[in-house]
Amino acid sequence: MRNRLSDNFIGAYLQGSFAVGDFDTYSDVDFLIVVEEDVTDDRLLDLQAVHSEIYDLPSIWARRLEGSYVPKAALRHHPPPHRRFLYLDHGSRELVRSDHDDSLVVYWVLREEGVTLIGPDPRSLVSPVSAHALRREISSTMRDWRQELLAHPDKLNNRFYQPFAVLSYCRMLHTLQTGKVESKRAGAVWGQNALDRRWHRLIRRAWHERGAPSSTTRQPADSKDLEATWTFMEHAVALGQQWNDSNSWND
Image (cartoon, rainbow, N blue to C red):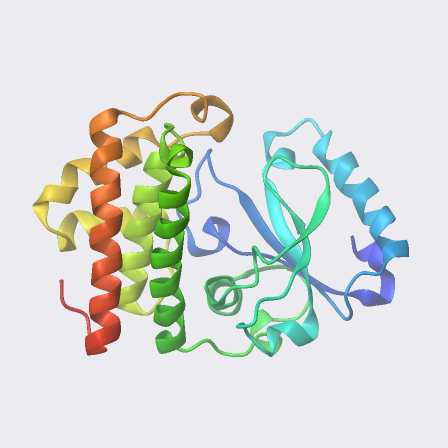
């Protein structure tokens, strides 16, 4: 990528689970490539070709890359409003425009825990993200994500997305409590210790059931787990609102 982007290339970084820890065989390889200016159409064809070549490499990780090409200026001016960067989704060989990585969670992880593959220290590129701003974004995400799923409930009814939602909401609640971003495993462990016992079985099963989307999206979720997940998300959103109302954390 450095060769293809030439003077427009600044650095390449890992974020996500490879940065905060606890990555495993099911993890995405979350990356960010920082560029001086947004990639122009004439360079885009080169990047598309490289990603297609990478996708065909004999490695499962070549098909688990997920990340964005972010202009340097965007790292100094955080959302909202959200911007759309060139983005590669897990399992795809084609770059598209998306706001997927334009979030305070991503920028916090990049600045505080990001792994530098090549380039300057990310702290020299990314403006600090306050715990208050991070919590505010997490609360909004929990509420908006649940609303989206309520509008399309079938999306949750499979053995990939249902445990993914449970672990993600545990992780988001953990961030609300700590003001930091940690792994899904850390969120699950925290949930087992900090949340009411009625959620412990659901969290344990979610961790046990997590898996690769290619094998589990075609299998319906356990009906009891699915029902409990809807209730758990409602509970998590209420906790997030409680924090917003009191500006403190009380379970």
